Length: 60
Image (cartoon, rainbow, N blue to C red; front, side):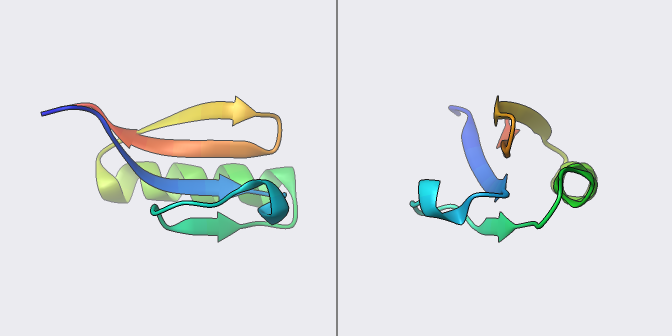
């Protein structure tokens, strides 16, 4: 089974589009808090795409 992007967390919604759920956060702190929570809930890993965008990926 290939890796799968489960969610995108960003502070700049104008740069994001696609089929995964997108979470828009107002600050770096909230960005990281949401990513950490989703990482645990989804049993996946967080990867930094840019300073203001993270993705949650399941590698299985």
